[in-house]
Image (cartoon, rainbow, N blue to C red; front, side, top):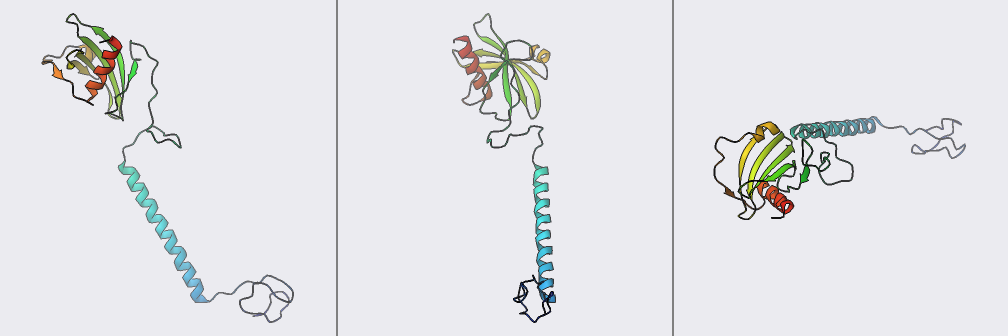
Length: 186
């Protein structure tokens, strides 16, 4: 090979001319060029396949509008209202057995039989719902008095509320009942 600047004979693999120091372009054989193109094409195809798989798996996950802050391991939490016992605010009720939803105690009062009447709101991926329960803190039993998609629907008496049922450990009604019974001092 000849130096591209001074024209002296130099080694075929030389990066610089030993006489003048000029950088040399290395000549590649057609086989080397073909191999480089083949490897580049393979890398591009692998990246396209990985992106397609990533897009497909993302489309199969449930969509939410919540954005999880970087560096956190807990799912995003909806904004919690300030504690009050009226209207749409309410006091947050911890319910670990339903981690994708949030519960609020909207209102509670003591009934004439000594049990508690409790109104709660649930907000989760399936929407918002309301429930009105009767809770016997001493016997740890409950029943639904009304349910619905609005406070007004939940306040309507169920046509057949049925008898009181035993609270089962870890259930949503148990978590709500224990929370309210502690508040009521029972």
